[in-house]
Image 1 (cartoon, rainbow, N blue to C red):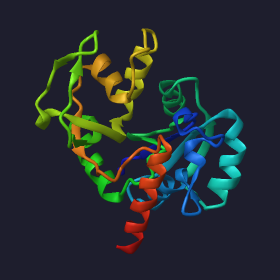
Image 2: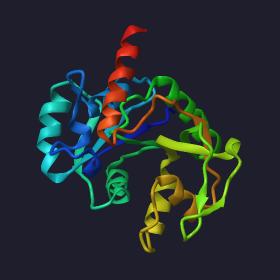
Image 3: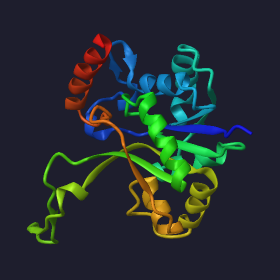
Length: 234
């Protein structure tokens, strides 16, 4: 029996660092909103069965009309409102899943995922039940102490910058989220942390891409324009 694989795409962020009245996921790169590109990848992927799009309550109609319907994203089964924090939006997405075996949780502000990344992620999650996409750090990383001095320098070969999608067995991530919601979640920054803390399952690291950037600041839009022009030439 074929596994059912759901993508939860998060598009509820406010994007305060963008300094724009338009939320970052709806800003345009070469005539398409940032959100369009990741949805297109999931739509075209043979691996993905359905997509749950999580956005702000005031943007549900816009997403349905101007993105899902306009671009014929037929795999989007539902557009729902997220929550106050990212982990709240993820949880709402998990609650909306039906009969899902594996779930890809992705930031809609990361436009440059590829089918190859999805394939590597699926292979990783099948192995361990929990997998995150990332890349080895190009830079030396310093951990600071409380006074702003260098506390330690981890070996660069052990440092990865984490991206999305993050991929999990549905039962594992659903149970982990339900467990951690009874506790202090103020330090939670991604779904891998939820699984690490609540399940004890080791999270597999798989290679994403240095192109798989998150649009956060105006400079990121400039970089994205360059990447997209390069991709179109290939």
